[in-house]
Length: 457
Image 1 (cartoon, rainbow, N blue to C red):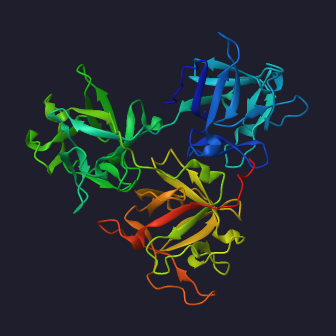
Image 2 (image 1 turned 90 degrees about the vertical axis):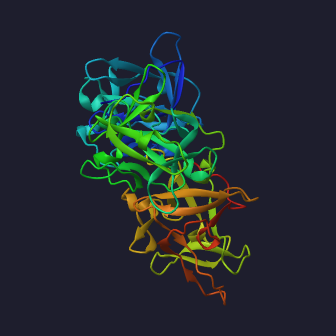
Image 3 (image 1 turned 135 degrees about the vertical axis):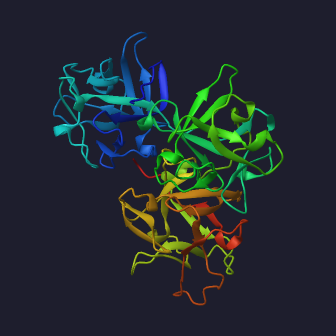
């Protein structure tokens, strides 16, 4: 299914994906062109569409929260992004194609020219062009809102003060009294490629997904994203406004509070639908959602410091070793770009999921290799994404976080406890099993770099 939004006067937080491959998205490149990249809903893939005629289909397309507009000047085929006042060069006719539930995006300079995927090639890095309009599939795009919900409680219809929660001693999902800790905060991620009203449900404290046990089992637990049908769910609204939450693997089996009990610690299970209140739930906006790293860290350099390190000064920071690209703790030097990072939020992966990019190498990111953390070329592999679990505030902007790997959320960054003895000494940052409770050796502080201005984009 391709998700199509009804275009109103202005829509923001949109992604634009080619019909040929919805796993790719229009992306602003550093060189000012529009290219295709893996669709992770990064800041360079999120746009605002603003209608420029009251009832027509003429829009400006700009990067969200900026003044960079899509532009074509009719001198060649290149589609560019630039700041400019409103004129035909940066206005676009967005024409709905009912047959494929898609849009053709034609230039207002010449409506016989449209944005085009050249040679229907959707490889990462393909530069989009403006070409003679023919309305073929390589000129058709879907426009969709962010797949990520706001943080929510999932409350039982048996008792709205009882909500789904993670359990500290194992991975089971249980019912517990509301406001009993961060393990009760969830977000749902819309998965249009699976069908209408299909979601993954992420627990924000663990970074794990609500999952049904294999072989049509009854257990409901929090597990890593293996992209199996067992970790996808269908939300079915009932006449009373509540929801059945059916497992995608077999929609006749739905989420159920065991024995309709609401005692703290009661297990959730999957059983055939039976019409009882124990199988009905509400999604309630969470009033105290956890802080996520500000998206300003995409434009400004971030410094990452170990919170529990014995040398508790601002002289130590995380950096990339020049010798083997491994992550280490070393003495901080303001002009050393090996200790400067950009955080690229990946909303399509989850509520607080990021890639950690080097400010020195343009297309290099931190990733997990065995139990080490290394800088390497960005292949958009799950091991190159990181969950930031909020622990507490800090006065320098950014917050204190536990950082787990998206491919295996049980593995988190861990810092050594011995101090650096000489200016040339360093200690390796590795991955280790996450402690049950937040510990300082697994907590890291995000700070703005004090003297780096926002980079131009």
